Image 1 (cartoon, rainbow, N blue to C red):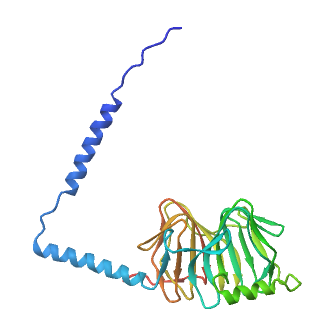
Image 2 (image 1 turned 90 degrees about the vertical axis):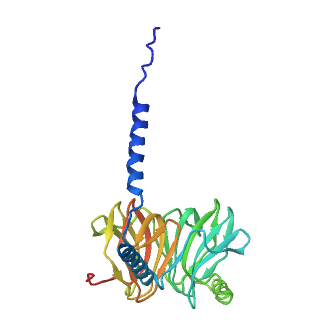
Image 3 (image 1 turned 30 degrees about the vertical axis):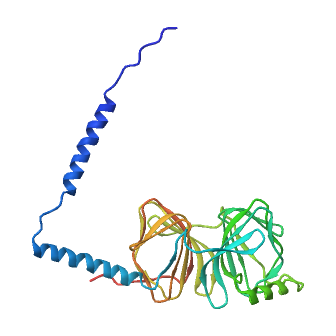
Length: 286
């Protein structure tokens, strides 16, 4: 069998020449400018003004990065990280080791959960990544287990409050299941367009407060807005800018009532959970 010799090409040399030319252009563009004193002062003033405006917009906003916070043992095989503490409940990340369980309990307030990885069993109900589950006040949960291990986000949980946790455990001993629990599996529900490249899926309504998934396509945008009430956000996938603030997957963000968010945008796309009242439009900048 005859074989033909491989012909060499100039692609490697061409690539090297192109890189050298590009580097030369970049270096020329990065060369320091010889500014007049008044130009330097004006530039400095402009930068400091922008920094001050950004600090004002971000004041009061709370962000918990993926590496922030401390994990604490709840019981053998289960650890939790506090994200935000309210007077009667909290938002946390909870991690189950394979085979770990939580006992039967009854909820004193509405609790929402999203499985981030792995799987959970709530009695006969099996939940996987992206599944949303809500337990109204008075509802009773059977034993929660995770044969394979799991990471989940919980909002409205009593974990971390010893007295409230004991009350829920004692409530679990009372017969009756109470109000029905509600689950939206990852492939269920209807997505509705709210802006070009932006969709939302309603998960739960509690008066004017709405829990929803928001999906941003690459290069999509939402206008700047204000918050009539507290708004809680958990980044599930991708990343997005909230004005000057970048949020990435696995990070938690809370905007208090009366706070503002700059334009929301995503270069590569994002999926996030948001709970709060409908945002209020801001007047255009003068």
